[in-house]
Amino acid sequence: MHEFLLQYGPVYGPIIQFLLLMGSGVGIPIGEDIVNIPAGILVAEGDMVLWSVLLAGYLGVVCSDCLWFVLVSRYGVRLFRIRWFKRIMHPRRLLRAKYQIDRRGAWFIVLARFIPASRTSAITVAGMLHLPFWKFGLATGVCVLITAPIQVGVGYLIGLGLASRSTFEMIQIFVGLGLLLGVIIVVVWLWRRSRLQGAPPPRAKARWLRQFRTPPR
Image (tube, rainbow, N blue to C red; front, side, top):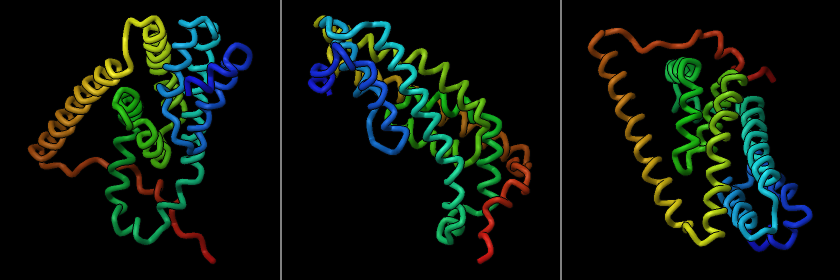
C-alpha cells in the first residue's frame, strides 16, 4: 500500500486514499489503518500534504461506513427471511436486540471503532437492526475525528523514525481489550439486574417484524 501511494501520491494521493477507503464500503476488506498510516508516512517524507491526507482520510472512512450501513439497512432484510436464520434468531430475540440497538446503538458503534476487527461487523448489525441513520452518522462522524488523525499521526511518526507499526498495533489491542472488558462487565451487570427484578427483558414493538415476512409468491 505504501509503494502504491508513493507512486501516485504527489499528484493523486488524496484521491487514491479516498477511493481505497471507499472500497471497504462495498465489501472490499480494506482496513482504514492500512491506508491512513502509509499516507501519514508519505506526509513525513514530503510526498503528500497533511491537510489533504487528513481530509481524504476522514471523508473516506465516514462515507464508506455510511455506504455500507445504508446497503445493509436496505438489503439485509433478505437474511431475516431465510428459514435457517429464523430458526436461530427467534422473533423475541430479534425484538430484544432491536430494543438494545435503539437505546444504545450509538455507543455500540463508538466502542466498535476502538475495538480491533469489529468495525464492519458492528456496522452490519446496526444496519440490519435499523439503528436510526442520524445516530449512526453522528457516532461515526465524531469517532473518526479522533481515529483518522491518530492513524495519520502514527504514520507520520513512523516516517520520522519515532514510532513503529507494531507499537501502534500493540496499543490498539490493549485499548480494544480494555473496552471489550468494560462492555462485558456492563452486559453482565444489566443481565443480573434484570434477573433480580424478575422482569422479562425489554423488547421493541412487534410491528417492526412485519417487513421481514416472506413476500407472497
